[in-house]
Length: 42
Image 1 (cartoon, rainbow, N blue to C red):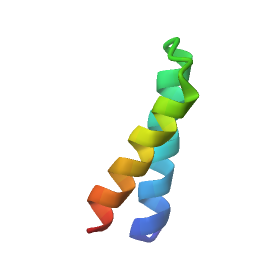
Image 2 (spheres, helix red, strand yellow):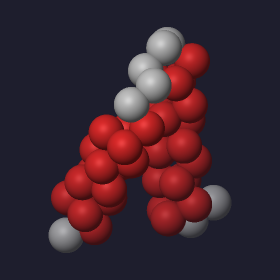
Image 3 (cartoon, one colour):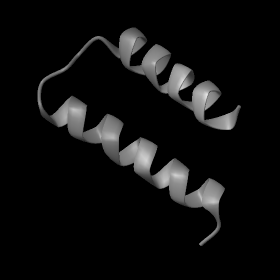
Image 4 (tube, helix red, strand yellow):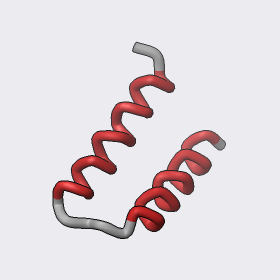
């Protein structure tokens, strides 16, 4: 699996886990994911 696909899977797993743990502020989850992608992509 290439790095992009692996990173995507990890990101989705992380977001899914946070939702299962009761986080419901979707905007905050998406913003944090966006920041992580930007930080990692640089």
